[in-house]
Amino acid sequence: MSTGKNTTESNTDNSEGNTIEALYRLILQRKETPQEHSYTCSLFSRGKDEILKKFGEEAVEVIIAAKGQGRQRLIEELSDLCYHALVLMADEGVSPEDISLELNKRSKGRDNPP
Ligand SMILES: N=c1c2ncn([C@@H]3O[C@H](COP(=O)(O)OP(=O)(O)OP(=O)(O)O)[C@@H](O)[C@H]3O)c2ncn1[C@@H]1O[C@H](COP(=O)(O)O)[C@@H](O)[C@H]1O
Image (cartoon, rainbow, N blue to C red; front, side, top):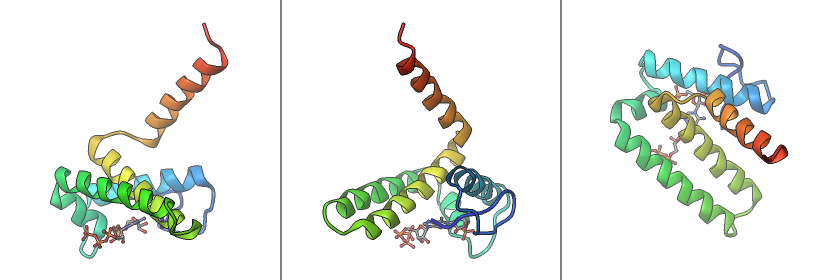
């Protein structure tokens, strides 16, 4: 998956949290400001059904990769899936922070059962 850094488009930050959030912000920018030659913009312009279709295709490609195409191929397909998940999230108004909050809620529930 290609990355952005903070609000720029630099690809030098390997911190996973920053990478996901920076890429999400860049995807949001693409949604708000259409650009020529942007795959992300073309995906938004094709609409929700196409975004969902791509997400499903990438999920299937992850499964196929995990069934014997090797670790590097699996990393590439998981990266495609993460990117398309972020596009879906941006289209639906769900942020990485929303996901973190949900995961944190579950983590607290498990660590401190009633
Ligand atoms: N991380 C990604 C990223 N991961 C995967 N992809 C694209 O997702 C597509 C994967 O789908 P396929 O393999 O089915 O390829 P395809 O045949 O081109 O796709 P379709 O025409 O069928 O939709 C490829 O075109 C990849 O280029 C991505 N496209 C963009 N980004 C990042 O998104 C940001 C914005 O980029 P632009 O969209 O170029 O502005 C930048 O940081 C990019 O690096």
